[in-house]
Length: 203
Image (cartoon, rainbow, N blue to C red; front, side):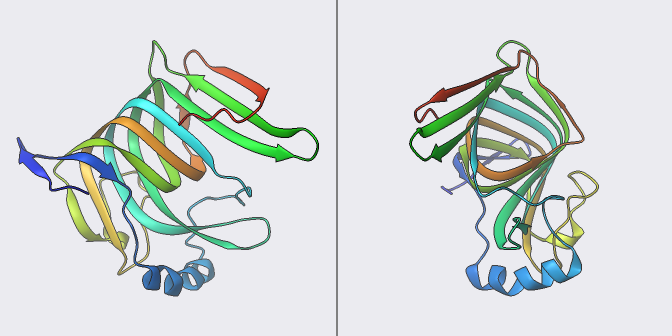
């Protein structure tokens, strides 16, 4: 992250990057998280990450903390969970590329929110990469993950782990790579899905 600029109760970063959890803390915490059932996604994630982009995201009730996903082979995958109580996204794009024998690359692309924004409640994204230009209001950085209270009710991590939260978040030029997304509701206006040969990603 670059140096923050403060103003009007908010914090702005010219480029916002996903928080990083120290490797030692992640390694030590994975087994404990699994034993305690403190998993990010409520399902076994696939073996493929997907990309998501949006021209802008506005959210109320933001929280971010480290956690772990598990795949069908019971392998542990460290992630940073971004949780937002209410979110609106403009020009949403989601893509995943699968490489098949003989056929080669196959791309699945989904778009929505071109005119009317995509709306989500209790949104959780288990990401490995996130970037964009961000503005936060009343942000708290370095809060214990088990005490988060600004995001969705379930948005809490393990005790003693690093986390951050804010009353609101606004991100333009959003790019993220993720293993899983959960939402209480997900309203996709102008939804379009397309599958094609070749590698066609959102970014």
